[in-house]
Structures are given as structure tokens and as C-alpha cells.
Length: 490
Image 1: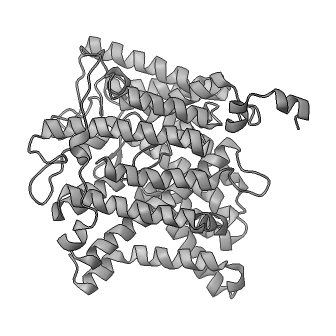
Image 2 (image 1 turned 60 degrees about the vertical axis):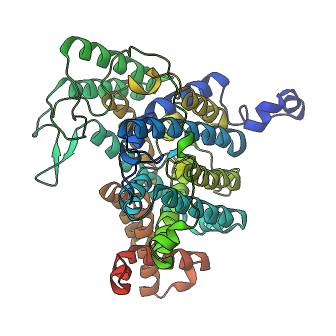
Image 3 (image 1 turned 135 degrees about the vertical axis):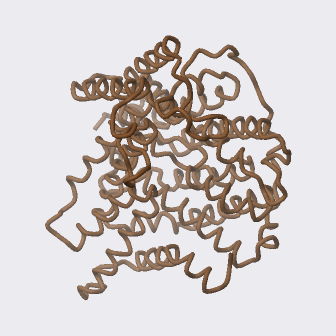
């Protein structure tokens, strides 16, 4: 415990961010912020390929035009802008080392589930409505109460499940795990083929060694070294992209998303303002109030529990839980995330939410909101400086996700697997996150099975009232499609 004199000597900005209190340094936070950005910068490229290439009911791309190239550029600029602003907001107000960006899964639901049934302005309106509802739940204390109602063992399983999930994301991004026959396959037809795969294996082994030896800044070192290797290999071997311009795989041994190279143009800017069009309640007319309400509910539950799961897992990994098992500034963190959902709708990028890839910066030492300021600043720079997002291939960033997955998976040791009443729900939580590619599904399965077991064991008094509410909400969430069929909703 620092003396009063020492505390008075700490600058006010240090006290605000808890820099000294959390045992970090300015250099460590800057490095952690850079690592987080490098690990998740792909979203500036990937989100436009999802949102920017989907047409609405009138055949228009986001922004109202029919030019797919313009649409992709607009969404890329808006993605970087909203991610940058919201991540900086998280750093300043939430004071937690977590980055915000357009949510994967949420953007797919928007592009392929909602936009074909309405205009883009109406689809973005639904995102804003969902964000407003979540913000109200935060301001009334409901979202925080939900966090406290989840048993500790399930919280640990959320962190472990996210660890497996983030490792799987890394393996899929690098092409080590692919879909096929059987359901998933290893690399290219069962073998490690191609220079991109070699790059991933090299990067993973390098990070394994650096992590095992506990080298300070090991993740950033690994990212940079592997990226340099990728650029060298592409310049000498001319590997090319895995997919053609339409997204179809034509070169199985090619690079997954970015083709690593030094770009010819270093500076450029696209004004994303054509995306800032909104029809707040138009969707309720376009597809009917009931269908629109179910869509908002699906968005809300996914956004709601993804963030709770992500914050829980990251706080455990960073050892930022206090003595009462709570996260400092939780209300502020959840408020920022709720505002980010609204901002994503207003900015035409889909709901923005907390990113589990933030674990890479935490693993490299980030402990405060200063790291988020750095990450957010780099996202804003990405609107102007092409190399920040376009020279780093999946195969160079993915090894960091695998190592981070290992670090987060270690939380499983805190779960009592001798107690089946909690061990089975914990197990379902852990496995369903990676197997269904959804944090929300994992949490839902864990909560519902926990309550069912308590009912069967006649221990309903052990279930807090709030957990009954959560279990009921998840039961409805899982039953959305059967309900639609019963009610005759398309």
C-alpha cells in the first residue's frame, strides 16, 4: 500500500488511469495498445467486405449507391473512425485496456439477415434502437446486476471459453483450420502447404519461445518479425491472395486477407459521411413490429452478453478483479460499450462492441485505459495511412491470438470439476463458444443448464432472482426461430 506522501506525488493523470496502482508503466501501455491494434486492425478491411458488399431491399449498397468499390471505401473509413473514437472513449472514461470496433457476427446478421428485408437506413436504425435499450439497462443498473448474478465458476469458464474461441479464430484466420469434409480440416488438404502457412508456423514457434521465456514485449516482437518475414516472402515468391475479387477461394495456399507488401500510396482519405443516414423506426413498418422487435432482441442479447463475457475474461486475465470479485469502473465500461452500439448504427458500420482481441495487448502488459488511447489513435490514423491496416496478413497476426488463447484458457484451473452441478455448465460454456463461434451461445448454454440442474436437484434457492431472468431470456433467444415459424414470421 503506497504511503500518503507517495500518493500525493503521483500525477493526477496517473491516478485517473491507475497507472502506478496497477503496476504498469507508460511504455508498457503504449506497447500494449500497439499490440491490440495490430491484432485487430483486420476489422478495417474485413467489415467493409461484409457490410460494404451487401445490398438492401432496393439493391443499394451502404451509402445509397450502386458502386461496390465506393461502398467498401466508405465502410472502411467509417469502421476506422467509429472504432477509433469509441476506443478512445473507453480509455478516457472506462479506464480499461479494451478496444471497441464493429462486432463480427453482429455485422453478418445486419448484412445478410436484415438489409435484404429493408433499406440500409432502416437496418442501421434497428442497431441504434438496440444500443439505446442496452444503454438504458446500464444506466438503471440492470446490466451490472446481471454481471454480479453469474456464479464465479461460470465467470471463470467464460474466460476459458473465450481463450479457446480466440485461439480458434487465430487458427481459422491463418488457414490451419478450414471447413470441408470432414466438418473441419487441417491446413491445405491435411498438410502444411504454402508460404503463408510457413509464416504462421514460424510466428507461432517464435511466440511460443518468447512467451515461455517471459520476454518483455514478446507478442509485439513476434508480430513485427513475422510481418517482416511475410513481406519478404511475398516480394520474392509472389504468393498472391487466397481469394479473388469476389471472395471466392482460387488459391488455397495464398494469403488469407491482406497480401503483405509495402503499398505504393501511403496517404489517402475517404469521407464516410454518406453513410450517416438513419431511419430510426422505419424497420418496424418495413417488416412489421413483431419481426423488428425479435431482430432487436437478438441484437441486444448478443451484444449484451458478448460484452459481459469479454470484460469478465479480460479482467481475469489482467488480474483486475478487486477483492469482491468485481471489475473496477464496470458501469463506465458497460456505458461506453452501449454508446458504441449506438455510434455504430449512426456511423453505418453495424453495432460496435468490446473486442476479445484486446487480450493480446493485456498479455503484453496493458493494464489501463492508456493502452486504449493508443489503440484508438491508431484506428483514427488508419483512416489516412494505408500501411497500418494493409501490410499485416492474417498469418502474421494469428500466432498472437493462439498464444493469448493459451493464457486465457489457464483460468480453467479455478473451476471445481469435482462438483458436477457447476462443472457441467462450465464445460458447456467453454466448448460452445469456439464450436458455435459465439460467446453469447456459450454463456446461454451455461446459464440455462445451471438453472435446469438446480431445479432437478431441488436447490432453486441457490439461484438468484436475476439468474432466473437471464435464463428465461436465453431460453427465448434460443427459441427465436421456432417462435418465428409458429407465428408465421419470415
